[in-house]
Length: 187
Ligand SMILES: C[S@@+](CC[C@H](N)C(=O)[O-])C[C@H]1O[C@@H](n2cnc3c(N)ncnc32)[C@H](O)[C@@H]1O
Image 1: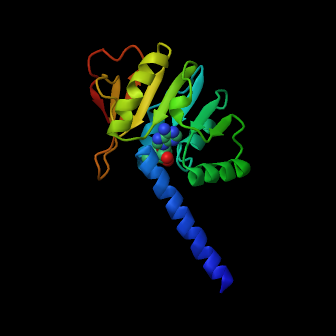
Image 2: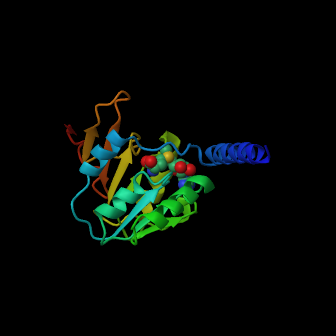
Image 3: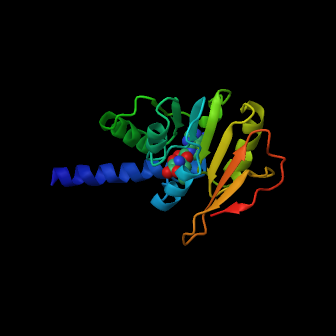
């Protein structure tokens, strides 16, 4: 009986924690779906020179595949919500991802000056808030890949349609090429 109560209390605390951080960050730790992840990973170049940033890592749905894809690059995954972050840390203890650093920190406090790639799945206001940071900090040529939400005012170099129920899109941008003509839609 006492175990049952403890279990229920843990569940309630977990939900409260996730709810509180959803209110704080503006977005729940909803993971990228397997189909979107496949399209997103296919949209990435085979090789990169520089660091990979994941802004809001959630449960690690993209952070771990990114670390495997680019074993020679540091992958810096930021997540504020304690439970998803803890889950990622547990995953890391089991997975071999020596190049992955999981930081429980607001990504607005990270400096993106060495980025070769920034990956995110946020929400419209979050993208609006992120834009000046990307414009101020990203080196020329760095890629920004966003699940579903465009960077307002930027022109993508490619847009990949996932073909799922939600008509999800993957937006690919290149720093300092953002004022180029909109790219034709792929796939
Ligand atoms: C929709 S989820 C995406 C998770 C993961 N990137 C994926 O695609 O599966 C967005 C995540 O971003 C996190 N987040 C939002 N704003 C953040 C911030 N300023 N700093 C760190 N994490 C943030 C949220 O807590 C949430 O877990």
